[in-house]
Structure formats: structure tokens, C-alpha cells
Image 1: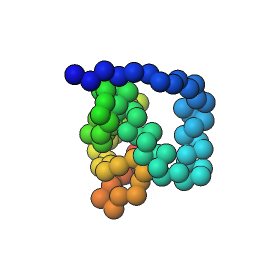
Image 2: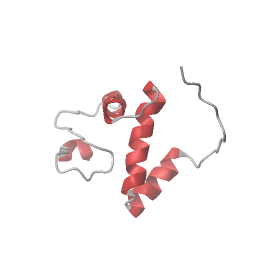
Image 3: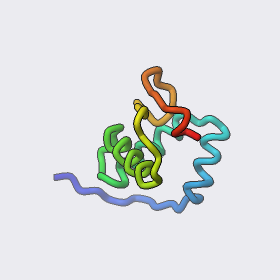
Image 4: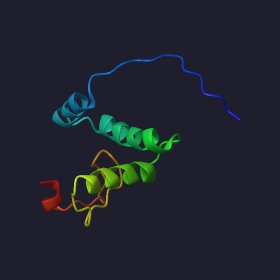
Length: 90
């Protein structure tokens, strides 16, 4: 099997601050990578949208946010197939 080797570690700013910058600057690639990283952090590599969607759904359910009507195809928000209910967003 393959063995992972850490070559470098970096401590970033708090996630809340990173997300503020991503949203303010509309950094679609950064949003996509953050979305994928959430799934990989919970379920391991390789990262994929199914894992990330499970993490997001669990997080929203934990906050008592109704996920009925959510259908996210990626993390950047650039998919024509993604759907989100306005009530859940607010």
C-alpha cells in the first residue's frame, strides 16, 4: 500500500476568517477546495463531493436547518444544477 509522508505543515488563519475572505472576494476555486477539504477531513482521502455533501448536511441538521430543497453539485456555487431554498439560506 501507499504510505503518506508529511513534508510540510502550515498553521492557517481561523476558518471563519478564511471563509469571510473567500466569500467577499468571490474566490470560487477556494470555495471549492474548502468544500472538498471538509469531506476529506471527516472521511479521509480522496476528497469528493459526496463526502463533502454528507458533512454539510450533518452540520446543517445539527444546527436545525431544514435541508429539504438543498441540492449542491459543487462547493463554488457555479453549477446550474445546484438548488437552495431561500428560507434555509436566511
